[in-house]
Length: 141
Image 1 (cartoon, rainbow, N blue to C red):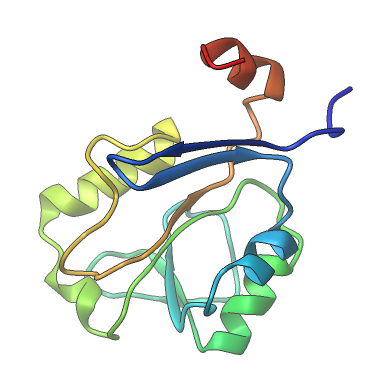
Image 2 (image 1 turned 180 degrees about the vertical axis):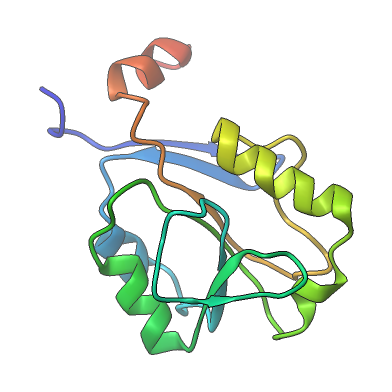
């Protein structure tokens, strides 16, 4: 049965969406605009630039971001978008620590939308969770 359905949970108060069964291509085709810049917080991807302040890898340019999002990865993809090239340089150590926490725990400590980054997306590809786990947490079914 795994892979035969799509699970979507929209938290309207926090404007968060948790989903299962949606491919990277579905995600890219479903958003209004592919981000110009993303910061990778999982630390396992290669072939990207590194921000000197945060030491996180980045992907810049809409085509490069699209290729990264749709491309195959060795592990889960975890990233946030940001607007300007120097936005990452504004993050305080506590905010960088929150991003590291998100990457390690695959969940957010605080709402993962940062005014300094002006991000629209925080994407966590958590391969450890299966739909049966998600369905058992929901009282709506």
